[in-house]
Image (cartoon, rainbow, N blue to C red; front, side, top):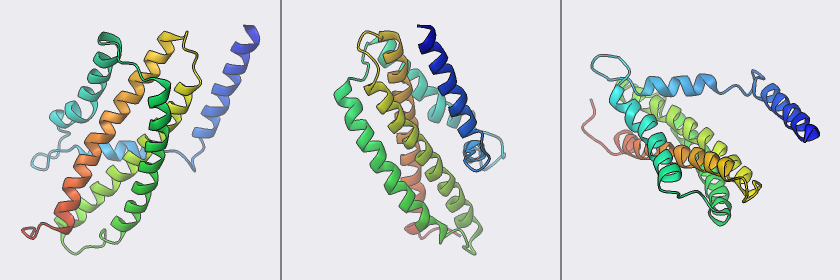
Length: 183
C-alpha cells in the first residue's frame, strides 16, 4: 500500500510539473472563456450564463450520479473516449476556419468570431479532458464505487458544459456566416 501511495504521489507531481509548463498552460484560455459570458449591455459577467454553462451542468451531473445512481459503465466510457477524440479533432479543424474571420472589418462580427474561437478552444480542452477521464474510468476497478462515481460526475459535468458550448458555437457560427442583419 505504501508503494502505491508513493507511486501515485510521484505521478501527481509529474503531471503537475507537465501542466505547469508555460508552453502548455491553458489557464488563459479558460479565463478568456469566462469573459465570453459577459453581458454585452453592462460588460459584467452574466450570472445567468455562469449558472447555465457551469453551475447547472455540475448540479445535473451530481444529481445523475449520486442521487439517481447513473454512473458511467465501462462500455459507455469506451464509446466516450472515441467520441471526445473525434470532437477534439473536428473542433481543431473548425478553429482553423474561424481564424480567417477574425480580421473582419465589422466589429460585431470580429467580436463574435473571437468569442466563438475561444469557445471552440475551450470545448477542445474539455473534450481532451473528457477523453482522458473516460480512459481513467476504464481503468478503475468496479469495486471502487466512490472513485467511479466521482469520475462519472466529472465526465457528465464536462459533457454537459461542452454541449452548452457547442450549442453556443453553433448559434454564433450562424451569426458569423449566415445572419445578414448584422451591421
